[in-house]
Length: 72
Image (cartoon, rainbow, N blue to C red; front, side, top):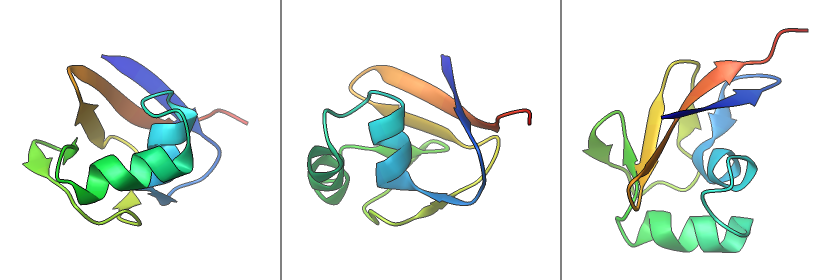
């Protein structure tokens, strides 16, 4: 599992996927989320703008990341 550090939470799910290199673009991230291919904390998530918090785990196509706040 990789760590994706973000500057602030909550952050939208599709943005985490884009920043974490789980999708090539925001549009691709939105598409796979709405298709039900992404899991958040072990459950299928279809809301593109789902608010993600520190400690949340996102999984897609065998790749998983945990979101953490970057130290300032």
